[in-house]
Amino acid sequence: MRKPDQIKVCNDTNSNSNKGMLKLRKGLWSPEEDEKLMNYMLRNGQGCWTDIARNAGLQRCGKSCRLRWINYLRPDLKRGAFSPQEEQLIVHLHSLLGNRWSQIAARLPGRTDNEIKNFWNSTIKKRLKVNVSKSSPNNSTDDTSSDPSRDIMGAGMFMSMHDHDLMAMCIDSSLTSTTTTSSSSMHNNPMFIKGHDHFGQLPPLLQNNINHDINDASSLFNVSLGEVGMGGVGGYGDCGILEVPYMMGMENDNTNLGSRVMDGDVNANPTNYMFDKKSANFNHHFNGEIDGKVKVEEVVGLENHWPGESLKMGEWDLEGLFANIPSLPYLDF
DNA sequence: AACGCCTACAACCGCTCTGGT
DNA sequence: TACCAGAGCGGTTGTAGGCGT
Image (cartoon, rainbow, N blue to C red; front, side, top):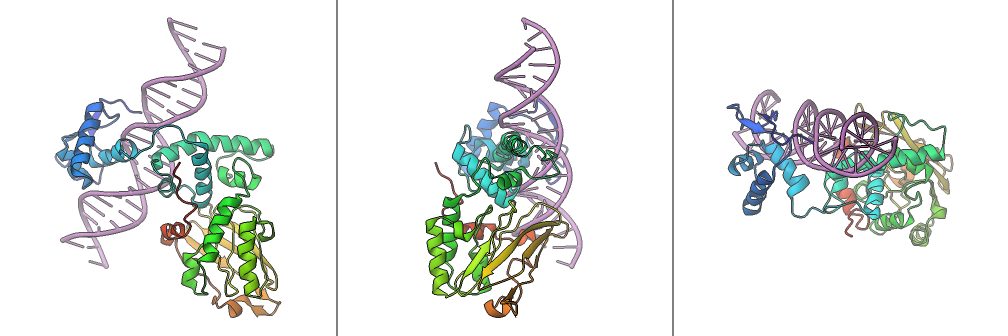
């Protein structure tokens, strides 16, 4: 926290409101400043933040006003400690999204990205580390060695690895909304799976859906999920019915994000998904064959690619992805 | 009571993204 | 196309307050 009476030239290089070297306050907000900003926002609503700062009579840069409003003054903010449900959801979403705090915050009504980020860094991260070190004493606790959520997902601790309810909801959504083999539908109907689950071990709801669809297609399609926590592990397949885009990991440099093995009528070599952080490219290496002869793409019409593989990080339509999973993303206790 | 350590979290900083010109 | 300004994001800092000694 900063001292409230600190007055400096605001370092906001983007702001042009301080070209005259206007002295702008920094540090903690006083109740008077809060009141000014609150009143102005309630009267006029959101607009250009530099204008807001000026018109509200605040000696603050627009950036500071924006932050104060978003993180503290907004009327719809939920104050107080995170509930266990929120905590679980944060861990889960973090395992899917990484440090995309704003994306995570968007799924927790009343919570801000800053709040979640702080909570993660101060509380969850520590707790996860403790749990991991307890479960595997040889594990390095080096910050750079691993993401705690990744460890925790691998260890099956803190939050259940087999989060069947969530999985069922996600996959149910994916399956029931997927009826075509087009690549665009694959992009729009993702499945998020974490952990070491196997279709054969999925909860009844999920199994029913999968078996139903797969049987209809007269195809056995078995996906063994890999062992990567971060980014989720899944796969996609398409025997006319089942399409399950892979949800990539996003954080590690050149990390092999896992492998997919398809059994049954469809036999394939492991499919490796690589994400190169430096180039922000997601590379998909697929060596699949069916019955050892026919390449997968010839059967399923994938043309040896799936829509995500050529996408860059920023091109992931996370909103779109979540939009198709009504049960997962929003928490409202 | 005084001191030091630790934690939580408000706020800043620097960067990227986006839209307008 | 290039440039600029504003918005937004994630990482980091700094300190108030709690707690143990």
